[in-house]
Length: 551
Image (cartoon, rainbow, N blue to C red; front, top):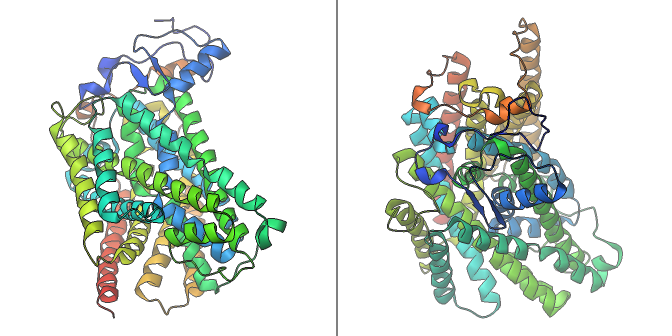
């Protein structure tokens, strides 16, 4: 191990925290990093002074950030981006640009929690807030994940249906592939498969170029920035884009995947680059899908006539070229498999965290039966729902988007509170500026969740008025909080930690930490968010049942 006084830089702390201090539930979470593109020994404490060694280390670390971001463009994401382009041209590209930094900030926080604590998101909630709050978080996640996987299997049926494959063949094959990849007992094998899907997902970029080169009304002069439709429909689509771009399952998946990959604070700067690269690529792919549909359909009879992603593939074949339709169907199929794979694994990680079962991709079926059985159960349940004759698949897709928007504020609040827990993160806690951004983001998510809930339950309501009122209240609340904060006497700041000290600091065993300091404001915030979530979920369920019965 290098001396503590050795020179360091941002990417190259000179020593790594001892593995035995990691607060892990599964010993498979400790050891060498065995990534798809390289490996790093747990005993490797040497500095990375050359560019070649830094790039080799970055390649070994790459994975969790890329996978979580590109899996975000799942079947639901592809459908929403295609709808935005077909109905509003390039008019909603600004939404993606606004969401990108929020997405990166959220995922950076969960990656930091995982690397420093060695514990998954569900386990930290249980340890720092109690098993009751942990059960709420787990129940929310499992319900949302199960429904999200259903929407991904719907994407599989639409994509393979383009090629004439019946869903009764497409769904079982996809289900068996997903279970096999997770059950292989090799983290490296799983990650290589997922990164292959990540690369295929970037086919959205040449798809946009093909459609642009095909000419036509949109392709000749670029997509129109103006879109049709009422203001209410635009607001709802903006909310849908936000809901599909930032989802609660991402928090649980990436944090546990970082832990499972054995990434420690020493490698956190590389994991940030991984997450940043994923953020850029997911934004580029989403923009490519949106402008593809804008170029293809703007100025045609199909403008504003979105049906589903399968219809988009067929319409691209007719209006642009057969290659464009085929490539879109491939992108949709790939997105469905990538999304289902990540969401399934995120749920299995969370179950292992809560109940204390072994939960690692380094373990095969015999060593982690509950972990793999949970993954198989998610996949089997989703496949069974999609195969039910007459199942309301469109209604399920709508419900998933609404539920994700409802659950997101609560998940974001837990994330922000954990990232300010000094007993857990020590010198890695959020700085003040990041807390300010995080608070504003949580507030905005609450506002969006409220708008989505009201508009879903009351379709005839004026969404523009609701949105204006919700964000006016948010601005007032944030201004009040800022004023109260300025009136408080400044706290004595803790001494700044050096890069070497931060790299050497990991969370002590969670069962040795003192209980969180009592906070009335924290308790009140969590209770209010929980009450809003339960009320909104109950009303949403009632509305979906009403719609399903034809009401």
